[in-house]
Length: 175
Image 1 (tube, helix red, strand yellow):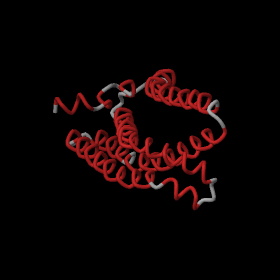
Image 2 (spheres, rainbow, N blue to C red; image 1 turned 90 degrees about the horizontal axis):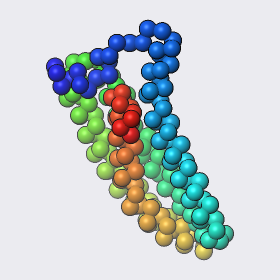
Image 3 (cartoon, one colour; image 1 turned 120 degrees about the vertical axis):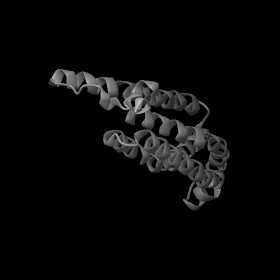
């Protein structure tokens, strides 16, 4: 039972006033909002640097990042199903440690298996983009970029899973 208490944010007393509730909300949401804003800032800086390379490179990078984001975020959505399962296990308080571990482990396996599909799609990005009617030169550059981006799929999905798990455990600062 001792290990369970360490995992559950529910062992703390619930907020009694709306100010306490607001503090608890900000403590949970603040680090998550900060992490997302930081990620958006990185994307903005990337756009500024890539735009200076020229229109073909900018178009290729935009297409590549778009394709990567669609596929990787879809996979993040699938593994994100572990977050409510973890929260429900913590709420039930019976066998929570086992359920949290099982949900996290199964989500990791889903991430690995899904990454195989996403990497395969990113590695055929050039013909897919040409089928979608994109310019041949842009599609070729985007295809090279997508093959490089494919190396980031598993780390991106696993880090998102860890961030969601930390939030479900009531420890968003870890993210």
